[in-house]
Length: 170
Image (cartoon, rainbow, N blue to C red; front, top):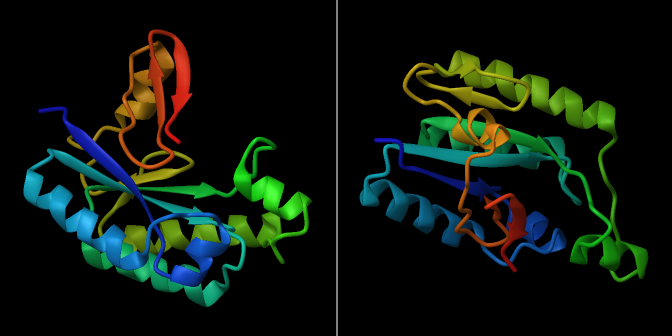
């Protein structure tokens, strides 16, 4: 069964709010529990490194919680702020006091996160993802979408690729 589900996770409500995320930690954890009960064959959690207001401590707490939850796969992205996003506009317009970790800090957090995931039984699959069982838990987004397969994103701000066109949920 190739059904998979993925969601974004961070364990600090203040950091989530600063980054324009509309969900709380509690809501994310409830959604994760619901997803597990639904019976998806593969469940992935995305973790962002380098969010506005993120500290080493908040990133490590989030990573600890992700490891505790035990998803089949974990994907870690370094924050980039595209020009068309509300976060970029809030920073540009001075509505958000912000401090972004440097790329060196983000890369260090990423490397440390993958080392900790490996100690927790995950194997690094590529530059961004780790899986408990790399043979069973393939990352379809990377392997199939790049070959032109459709991908339907169903979460808040999720990306889709359908009939050759990229979409993003509002």
